[in-house]
Length: 143
Ligand SMILES: [Zn+2]
Image (cartoon, rainbow, N blue to C red; front, side, top):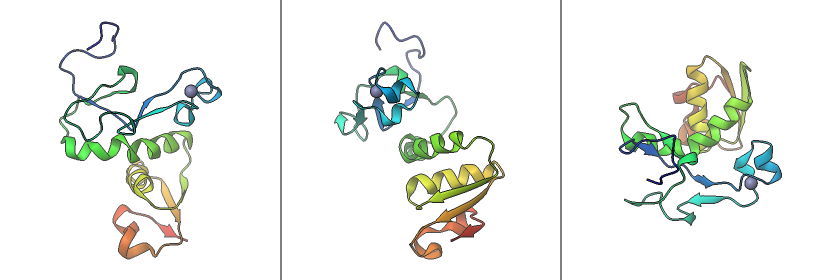
C-alpha cells in the first residue's frame, strides 16, 4: 500500500470498481460527476485488474468492504451496482422511479430501491417477465 494512503489500512478488504481513475480536473470531475470524466481508466479495461487475482488500484476509488459479505456477491456491485447507486442517489427522495431499459444496473438498483420502499417503473422493449424477471425484483409496473 502506498505511503500516501490515509483512507485504508493494511489488511482492509476492498472492492475495486469499474471506474478506477478519473482525472480530477475536467468539467465532469469538477461537477463531481467523475463517471463522465474525459480521461477515465476502467478496471480491466485500460487498467489491469478486475477479474485478476492481483491488481493495482487507487485508494480513492476503492470501496471498503467491512461487512462479512461473500466477495462473489459483492462483485456485481462494483460495476453495475455502482451505476445504479449513483442514479438512485441522484434521484434524491423520489418515491417513484423510472428505469429506462432493464439490464444489470437496473436489475440491481431496482432491488435497492424496492428495499427503500420506492415504487419502480421499468420502461423496456423486451418482454418483461421471462428473461428480465421484474416480478422477482418487485417492479410494480412495466410499460
Ligand atoms: Zn475528469
